[in-house]
Image (cartoon, rainbow, N blue to C red; front, side, top):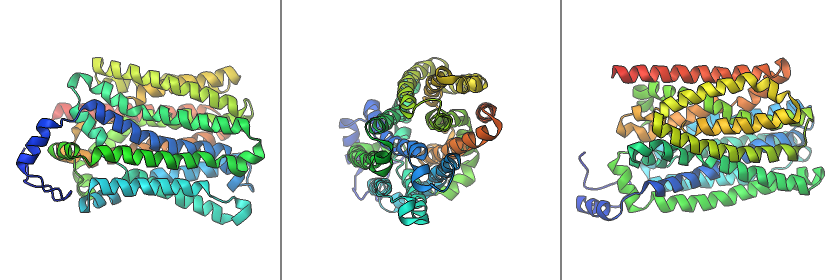
Length: 443
């Protein structure tokens, strides 16, 4: 690869000799990159889980007191999906910011916007105070969250994938995904503490706001932790050496659109399962009043531990049989889980707890290898933006509407609708992996 004598985007003016000196004395360790990925993604997952839990426990009564509990949750889940719709827009917008200024400035603006939108939710007045404006403000803050999340892409997952030993790629891919169960554990534990120690009136009045304040604080910590990594000379050089730089989204979609959508659909079973075991069970059980809120949160926290254990197994398995093979096998496992879903969720307390814990375990096995499963198909110079958009569309297609669709269909047609929803994700995953394998063989 031929290097230019300077890096005008960052304004550092490195010469070739500077680059060689930095590379000689400051190598980028995969473990260091993995820590950066975990810190950054944990803060983002915590934000979204706090919002998702609030869609069940808070927003229906706070913002939709005129609707039934079911319709209030459906309205809240509709707002929940807006962030995932806005996320590709955020990626496109902030890629242009990075091309104009730098990765550090882009990340700072994105995380400041994410934290501000989250903090704005903490101060949100209820419907009884300002009427429809409260709903409008939540819609605005949620869209801003999605734009900011798209803009917070720092390229560290791609850098991690390119800097790990070939025999350890599954293990390091799994490390980056640990942020999801960690973020859920913290969010669930915080809501459990507040809901257990406050009466319902105080919880709806002010108690629920504390997790959003905590989310803002975590974003500030994550911002400085990630900036400490992405703006250093060794990381700048590593990114430039691997050509992990933003390109025009129009060019990317025109030349690599098929790879983006194959990548998004390849992980669809995992992403569909994601919100069906984290957010949907809470809504279903609360509406049915078959368990207390606190009991469900405890089960889900235990499930998050099962998810972490599943991810560890996925990392070991993927390095033995391959990441794509692992993803295909886990899709088949999700299909089996989908078939027994009606019996578990409809089977009383024991069955519901089994659904949550088994579902989280299966999520760990599948989600642990869902990131970057086919992003190696991208040319090197397209991987930075390609991985970002592939992730955006995987969340949009697979997870954005999962709580809304599952709750809406299950209350109308029964829990068999949840099975059908999961099975559709499995079919899409297996087809995408098959297409990807055929394309790889042809090339």
